[in-house]
Length: 196
Image (cartoon, rainbow, N blue to C red; front, side):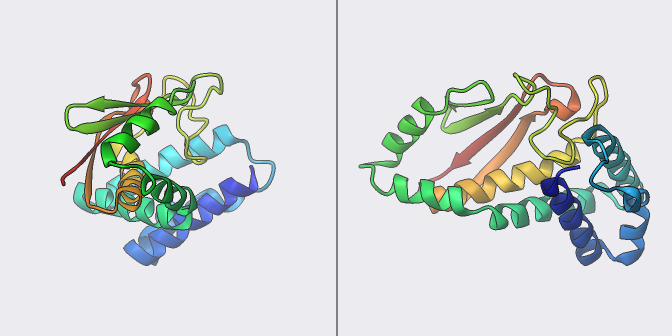
């Protein structure tokens, strides 16, 4: 298990304790105490799927969604440097449209791409291309093929994306999950919309 994965598990545990209390955290985190540097990423992902199921049995769907949205917002805050760099880049363009066009043109890769969709921006992540990953999050990265996890977990990425684009665009945005690799789709798709 990488140091990065340890950081994510630690953050997950801290968020559980802070947002939902020690009793729920203890039940959800059961089994994680056995993890160490040699724990395989597959074992972490399977454990995380189980932790997500345990959490779903302990709280209603609104609290579950809210919890992962909080996790995503906190993760975005901890990793804000790229968004700040993009915001500074955006400020050099004559218009938001010109910046979006440039961002789309530079987004073509094996792992992700951006496309215009209506009055919004579709963000596609294809974690399986070339890396055999199910998710970019280290905790679900190696979920075995054929297994799925609750889309509630994707609320973390949705909130991360929202905070990221609000920072870049300096305005409120709405983000919708329209596809999820964890739910069996080939890729993840987030639709970002803004006004003004």
